[in-house]
Image (cartoon, rainbow, N blue to C red; front, side, top):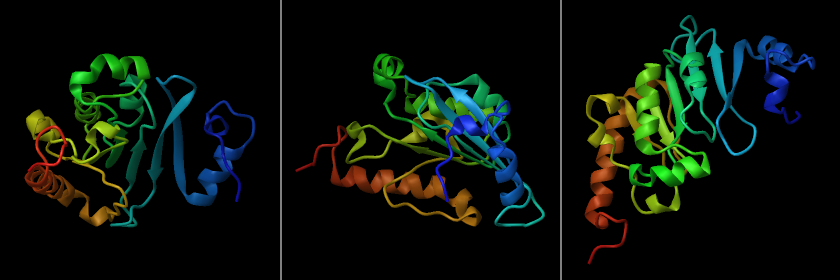
Length: 185
C-alpha cells in the first residue's frame, strides 16, 4: 500500500493512479477542490454495488475541511451518504469563514441542496466537547442528518436509523450537561 495524494485522483492527473484504483476497487472516484485554507479536496465515491445490494449503486461523499462548496453539491448530487464537516456552531459564522470551515447549519443546508439521503456531520470544534449539535432546530431539512461521535461505527443497512439515535443521544447528554456543555449540578 502507498499513500495517494488527492491531486493524483484529479481527472487531469497524468499518474494513472485514479484509473488503476477505479479498476481495482470497482468504483468511480471524483475529487473536488473545496474551499479551505490550503488545497483540500472533497471526494465522491460511486460504487457499482452497495453493501446492502450488490446490484444497487451507492454514492458516498466526503467533504473534508471546507466552507460550503457548490462544486461539491453538484458532484455529490443524490448522495446515499454525505459525511460533512460541521466545525462551528451557527453563532460562530465569522470564525467559520475565517477558519475556512462550515457551521452546522451550513452543512445541513449542503446536505439538503445535495439531496443526500443520509448525512453524518463530523469534525466538531471543542465547543461541542460534551454535547453533540441538536439538528432538530433545522426542521425537515435535517430529517436525515445525524452527528458522529468518537469511535462510531455504522453499517449501510442501518444508516436510516441514525437520525433518531442522534436525537436520543442529544437528549441523553442534555440531561447530564446544561446547554453550554458544562456539567450540570
